[in-house]
Image (cartoon, rainbow, N blue to C red; front, top):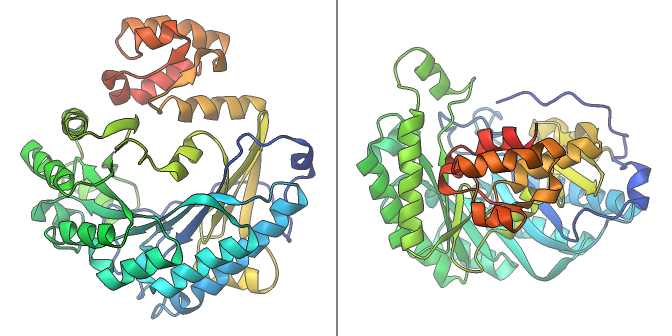
Length: 410
């Protein structure tokens, strides 16, 4: 797993910079991310902040995790309140790891802490990630009763040999079953897929996308496999036991998922995400629009911003020092950075360009505005939208989004 970034020290009480009290928020919504860093097994491609029971010496940290996370929620309420940023939460997202490694009661306890300390907006979106083999019908019903509104299952593939390469443990035939259980409980459902796994053919990928869409899900995410340094898959690729993902193959698979999802009534709203009308993930949209969010848990990142400045910080990565710092009344933050006006503008372009509604040309620097005409000529930016003053990626532009962003940001 990657090291934490460098940064300046965070006050021991977790207090935020005083200038935030005088700065208007960059967005009205407040999001809360709750990281649950536990997994039954570590997937070979994953470099997230996660731990198995063996790595934690029996996994005893899981039993007390809800209490530690709830303590950080209380810290968030105090710190945000001191600078006038405490307000009801519009979106909550439990990610991991595998949040459903914890009992439904623990997840409900963490959500209750959010409700008690900060409040939830009417109609708040509350999502948990889950693996298909980490839930049952009763557990999903319990989550819905506790106030969860949405579940995102890590499907990744419908093809057994692809799942085996990814070290995924679930039976692909279980996916439609868990989707049905979630729907019966009244939960909206998203499925996550990964394309470009070594050994995955285009037909394998088609089979996976079609299987996901056949469940009738509201939301689909599809991510190109990235082989990270320090992972088991990274070592296998480096030693020649697995082939590295082929960018041309991944481009073909992206075009295929876009075609199939669109034909099924799911429109793209961010480069890697498709949804039925009204089913976009509001929590992730808040990230891409540089809203305020507090990240709870080991390794979690947070962001509180204003139109021309922002502060971002990150927590220690291991569950034990994380819990110990909170038990002592301190902050689990390991470091932070303050973003100036140029940094904020750059991030808004980096993130906003990925959205289907794009970003205003006026948000670009002079050099970025000059680059738009060339990007339209190259078929990377939609000409009609550019005439209307917005930068919106074409499908080809989505395939080359990083190159487009480089052109737009000097």
